[in-house]
Image (cartoon, rainbow, N blue to C red):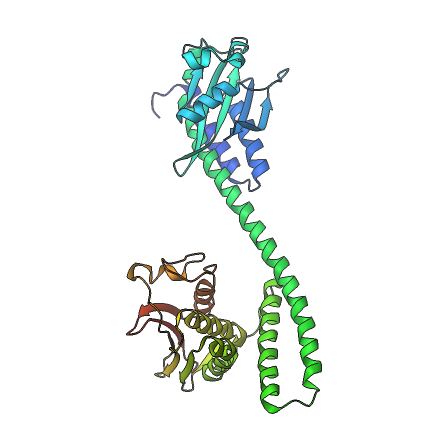
Length: 374
């Protein structure tokens, strides 16, 4: 910065300070107001505004004795062109014909677009009756630099707000599911007191186990308490998962087959039961009538590997890893939300293992690899 005017150095320092202050804000409303206040100070303007697409003024900042609204014609021009507009003696034909510009009382205006990922999302607007066109034009670089920081801060705040909204909705849904599952459990408990045939009683027990798993899953989403892990054998968990899927398999005309060995792992049994249920359910969804879903569990003394084979169309080679990304739906995928496999990867990773997908001879194969408990 050698040789730079002292005023320019001071402005750059203040730009850095204001950008850092902005980064500490997380709420959208506070970010927008902080941006307007910072633009007023940084550009030594009389008035400053944040304008979003649709030409909505969402934040205002005024100097002493100032009031009023910005020229939306100038903002519209900056948003449409995607570049800064500096105007005092309006020469552009479109702008000079605008009534709001004609009534600006000789204010010098600087309007700089805000962009996120190449898309114009709004603009920063500042004007002054004390400054001329040339003075305002010298501030373009400073305004553009701050606009870049403001765009990032606004995008981050919006993303955080959306994440909080989704978290709230998920917790509310978990609360309702837990209450409903609790009511269902009481009804199933009463049915167990009846004298039912053994096959009906076994079905009732399986349904109750599934319902309790749903209740446990919903409860874990509502509390931050972490359950203690214990050594569990994967084989019985897989057998239980297969038993729980037999209703859907029977309806679809799909055979469920198993090849299991003992495989002790240090884990939360309910979490691994969710992984197994998701993988088996996914395999059933893609296996056609008359096909077979196979669950194969091996143990080499170091790693336990659960492979779930389906007989569906397989996975496009370029999507073998993407299928675990939350919300991803491969081309030709069955209707769904793209959540189950992402949940599997998260749970397995928490247990020190990994999950992967590949194509087998007759469809897709999903492999869960976990360390064996010594």
